[in-house]
Amino acid sequence: YRIVTNDDLTLDPSDCQSLFDMLIDNSVSDLCSQLTLNSWNLYSQIQPFNFLNLAWDKPSLQFRSLELLQFIDQLNKISHWVASMIVCQPLLDNRVQVVCKLISLGKELLSINN
Image (tube, rainbow, N blue to C red):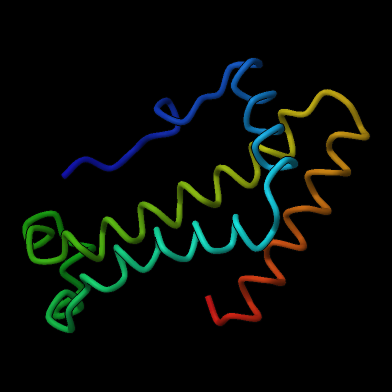
């Protein structure tokens, strides 16, 4: 298991435009469904023993919490994606569109308890 670093998540400008198009072109409900399915696939693998003795926080015990670490890593990637989607937009109008879409997405995710 390898934790993703910020270097792995760097976007170049062409990625920003294609991600912008993907975000704007898809409906909030479709994005919500995909994020939920992706999260559920990882979340459903977490077992109570993954939390014992803070294993995810101790390098010598992390092998006991791989599922939990993968879920945390996924949440960190989503957080990074949200921030990157906003700051990589060079035009104010695009940033406004992204923020509005992400707020709508967040509300939809909250309404389904995700």
